[in-house]
Image 1 (cartoon, rainbow, N blue to C red):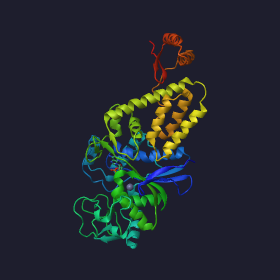
Image 2: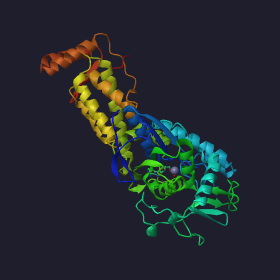
Image 3: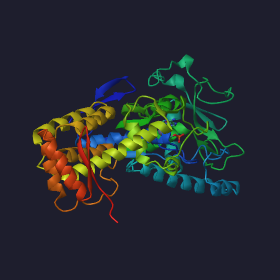
Image 4: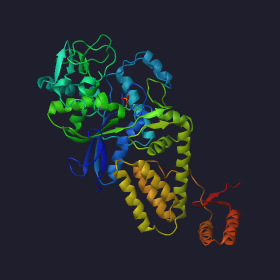
Length: 466
Ligand code: AMP
Ligand code: ZN
């Protein structure tokens, strides 16, 4: 089993991954809030644990992933998104229940994630099913002096947790309140955050609790669901860069405040996706759904290809031109793989192929360096390897890349005898016998096989026949 180094937001450095249970890595990922469609920015964040799991499994680890579905907390929001299904808008105007809305957008999320080959998590806990666990956790926090109740609302007392701010490198005196609008004067510190909120007049989703009817804060959901499913110690927690504060800072304070010890070993955060320099966000309306990319004629995996070109931690600019380039590159790559596979020349060049394989493994083990892995893909394309070896390498790596490299547009079969002529021409070209190579090209053309020479060798296409 190859060991990996991962960048831990908590320590701000790459650390060797040491799973709690050797060979098995348990991961909790912040999932979507299901009251609107997810956009490709959200998908980039969800792609991080997908790449993490694929890489871990490629390197011989077993993985288990939990991704929560936040189906409480934002469901009465009444702003409608661009691109939203008109039927749904009217359904909402006809006051669909929050449960129906959540079910609809959960389905849409699953479909969008599948479009970009994000593999399903092992568990998708829904926040509304974990209310009793959240209430238990809040009660423990009150009992341990980490939380206090005022008028049916429970706040976390950040002063009770001295390392509060460590994850996000915030100090208590410069902490943002994490909430919009006026600060509740009953708070002990403006940075104290809500664990349980007393039901207001307009809430649809309300539960009974020891502090009266109300609903949970967003942060407590993830503490309760992660520890319920993965226990009070697990390996990796993922999310987007914007989750570091306040969401994960609060989660850490809750989970560790309640258990009295370290719960998460590695915190990983994905960089944000930008559109024209600003963060892609539902509220700003500058977002794309994966299905919109499809409507524009792109392969949704072109988005994945684009995302793989950047380090997961850096910001990435999304543009239609960038996507179009990725779309072309992806299609070309698939055609090449199909070409190589069809050529079926002499067996693999075991030795050289192994060297590429080792470099690929080293790249993904180095904090999931997918850009380096993609550079290696480009190197293999140009490499002096047999077509068989190239096809084998790329198809194998696709277990991590998830680009469906085996899915080239259907090609016409070579007519009988053409493969031998192509191989002979390849040899003639290598020997710089251009007379022979031209003659062979004419022979192939007469059979309906058009050959062109490229920097990476000859490429062929079977012309359509009447
Ligand atoms: P939400 O459904 O708003 O809770 O967002 C789901 C996830 O998407 C969160 O983990 C966010 O960190 C992430 N996210 C939101 N906007 C972006 C963006 N522009 N780029 C990357 N990730 C994002
Ligand atoms: Zn979360």
